[in-house]
Image 1 (cartoon, rainbow, N blue to C red):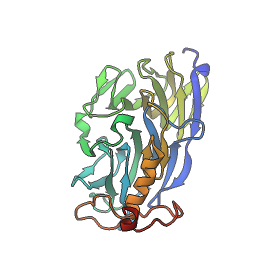
Image 2 (image 1 turned 30 degrees about the horizontal axis):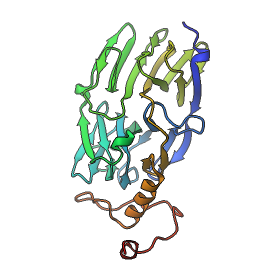
Image 3 (image 1 turned 135 degrees about the horizontal axis):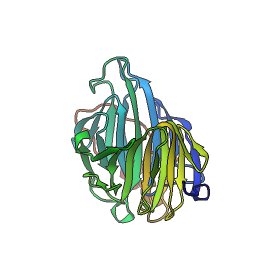
Image 4 (image 1 turned 120 degrees about the horizontal axis):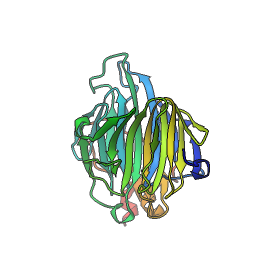
Length: 306
């Protein structure tokens, strides 16, 4: 193998976090590495047993300035949003939702057709929109499992979810040039990461990878330096994600579900959600309130507009 040790910029261990309906393993943002390519947020959740009731449902909540990417390995979730989209997402398919100036969505497990006792397991990631598109119109796109390109051979399997690499191109229309792929290597196989992907990382789901003798275990992300050769070797049968893409065009602020290059846009989004000025999801109930102590109690909307 090539000399990888000097090429690894960061090793990130996922931290336990709660999103209310379930506990997750949070990978990004990290204090020493806020983004990889345009990816600004990565949560790994499950496997968690699906039981009857609504305990795993994520109630309506808002977003601005980003695109959400939902990708499941097992179980089902039903997406609803303020555009009127209703879509069950199944393993291997992908939901890309562009928040732009503002969208509200929910993700429910209770009415997605899961059998009691089945397991829910997946990744939720956010892609920061380019600055010129932070205030764009919201949009939603679902791409089925069979539409995503795959290649398999010599102990290697790859599915490209977003972007282009390894001679494959995803049909998902994106912003910000992200690259996102699911990979599997049998023990003893090595995979070189494409140099043309500007920022590159691997996040291990199962098994054990090595890079120049350094172990990359489940729940760990390894971020590689730009431009040079980089490869990972499977010390045992391993499943992992490749996450990265073009470098983000400037600093982003992230607060709760809001991402923006402009702090004022986040403050405005807080007020809009507090005043219930975001669009509503048709035939949906409930909402997640702003986190406590997010700001001083604002004046009534009528006074603020005077």
